[in-house]
Image 1 (cartoon, rainbow, N blue to C red):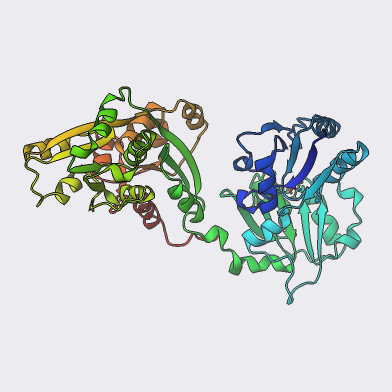
Image 2 (cartoon, rainbow, N blue to C red):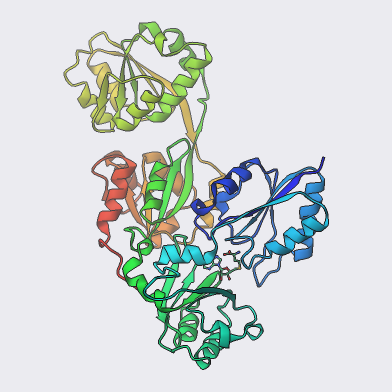
Amino acid sequence: MTGKVFIVGAGPGDPELITVKGRDLLTQATVVLYDNLVAPELLPPNAKKIYVGKKKSDHSMPQEEINRLLVEYAKNGEIVVRLKGGDPYVFGRGGEEAEALADAGINFEVVPGVTAALGIAAYTGVPLTHRDHNSSVTFVTGHDPDKIDWTKTGHAETLVIYMGLTTIGTIAEKLINAGRPPETPAVVVQRATTPRQHTIFTTLAELKHVVETAHLKPPATIVIGEVAALRGKLDWFEKRPLFGQTVLVTRAEGQSEEGSSQLRRLGANVLDIPVIEIQPPEDAAPLNEAIENLQHYDWILFTSANAVTKFFAALFLTNRDARAIRARIGAIGTHTAAALQTVGITPDRVAEQATAEGVVKAFETENLAGARIMLPRAAVGRDVIPNEFRRRGARVDVVPVYRTAVPLESLEKLAAVDHADWITFTSSSTVKNFLALGGRRLLEAGAKAISIGPATSETMRAHSIPITAEATTHTMSGVIAQITSALPKVNPPD
Ligand code: SAH
């Protein structure tokens, strides 16, 4: 049985700008052929992924070879997605690929994408048409300026030039000679729609100089026309509070990605570095025993969301559910309480302060004499809670339900990071593991460290990490609030 090829536009850079259809096809693909303009986040984990390059400088794979691969994979019965930057039929050679498939009698479909020009229009504040200014738009390639009759194209009211970085001097000259006023507004945009978008507002006459002095590199696109002047008013993307800031998030596996998406929505360039891997405890006996004796406990205190998920996973494995619990339930902080809600349990008590001290405080008035308390938690942890509760007459069973490790894959990931403006630490383990992975050099290079709360700060001080700020609410949102308040309210225009 032969397969099928889907030529899919990936959009201009922001991975969220792919179409719903394109995204769905990626989940079905068995083979994905992609080029260098495609956002890496879009690549599906399970498909065979083939990089076919296409940078001007390194023609990693000739077009004929790409065409041949598409045909061959389809003939082998694969569901092939040919993922291309922007739109496949706008300066993408998607036409040639579709022709090759048609010639070989291969079944194919084409899914459009947001082309760079449209991404730039929206994300830099340059509408391509505007009733007050123009009624036509032209997309041209600057690849070979001699092929274009600039006396005609030059009159296009909005001119979008793809691949024109190296030839812009010649193009600008030809446009001016053809009668376009030298002071016509223009923008050059590099890496549009990504957190590293760089926009320069200038004039037609100045373009060559601007491109040279700013050392712009592809992918970059130039828009010339009166509409470029609207940018001053419509530029929302680069005005978001964290635009231009690189935030390294030292994340624990299983920890929600909510913090990172919140940072991205605020405009930050987020580097997600997992520093903690959750593994089963070395000895499962205490957990199994605690589950067998579930009826005897008066309280179960969960001190992390991980403790909740791992404890209940073990409980469910024994064919029991929440009804097997007679004890009252306590949670450290709202995050752990939310994890309990996902297994249908509303905790009887939630410590407002998400620290061991906060839990102690939440039980201040409780008579604990003779109470049996289970404390499911990480294999290694602080003993503040068991010590204090035992002192007050409780019988406390500390039950390791998971242990943490340093994910070795992150060594390489972190080694590739050359700069961060901010680093977030959300637990003592994130601090220690980040250092173990070699992260100190980023701090020494000036990255500012934000701590989620007092215990984390203590560990940071113990490791001589200067603390730029400590969150007042001990959540990732609290950490983010410290970053935004440390920055001026609006980025100054460039
Ligand atoms: N098919 C693509 C274009 C591929 S040609 C599309 O529809 O967008 C490559 C050129 O596209 C680059 O040289 C640049 O001019 C433009 N381009 C692609 N992505 C871009 C981006 N994120 N920012 C600015 N220009 C981009």
